[in-house]
Length: 356
Image (cartoon, rainbow, N blue to C red; front, side, top):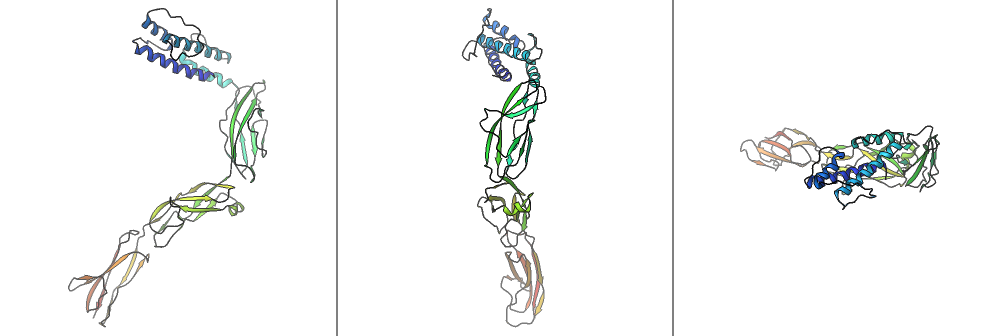
C-alpha cells in the first residue's frame, strides 16, 4: 500500500470512527487527535492502543482508532524516510502536503497516457521524467508484457519515434517503461500505446441545399491528406438512421461515413449534418386579353422551383364566383396562383385574364 493509499484509507477509517462516537453520544472537540478523548467520554476508562495489524471492520471503536494511529505512524515514518521533516506532533491535516513534497523528490515517470499512433503518420513522443537526479536513462523493462513495435525506436532520454507502415497491426501495446537516474534509482510504469488505422477527416461541401423537388446527396471530400492518399481511400456516404443515399424533401440528417478500406478509419466530418431547407418560391404571372373563341384560357405563369405544389384559382370579377377551371365565357377574371407545399414558404401572385 502506497503512502497516499494509506492516507486515503485512514481518512475513511476516521470518518467511520467519528460517526460511531457521535452516534453513541460522545463528544468530538477537535481534529483527529481528539478522537481518543471522544472515545473516553463514552466509556470513561483508560484506553490501551495496542499494535493491530489490520483494520477491524467489526471491532470496537477503540480498536479502530488504534489501527488508524498505527497507520498514521507508518505514514509519518515513510515521509521521514523520503527526506521530509515531520515531527511527532505534526497535525494529521498537514500529512497530505508532506506526502506531495516526498513525491516531488522521488524519481517518477510523469507521462500517464501515450497518444495513439496512426499508420503512415510520423510519431514522436517524449516521456516526461521527474525527481531523482538527472540525467535519466529510459529503457523497456524486461518484465514488460509487450515490447515496443519494431517500427518504433526508444532513445535513452525517453523519446519514442518512428512510423507504423501500412502493414502494421492495429492493436494496443501494453509496455512497461523503466527510468533510471544518475544515482541508480529506478522506477517503472506501464503505458498503453494504441496503434490505429490512419484517421481521415472529411469536409461536407454542401451542408444544405434549397428545396427544388429533386433528390440531393451530400458532397464529401477527404481533407489534410496528400493527393496520393486521397485516391487510395474508399468510402461510402449515407444519411440518417435509415442510411439512405439521398433525400428529396426538407429534412436534416446526420452524415454517416463507412470506410471500405481497412487501412483507414473515419475521424470526423464537418459539418456533420446535411439537409434540405425550405424554398422561397418566385411566381411570375402574366395578364392578357383574348377574343372569345369558345375555348378555355389558362393562366400564363412560371413558378420556381417548378415542382412546387400550388393551386390556380379563377375569380369572375362580375359575379365573384371562383373555380379552378380555366374560363371560357367572356368577362374579366382575376387569377390567383398560390403555393401550398410544405417544402416552401407560402407565396401568392395575381394576374387577370380578359375574354372579349
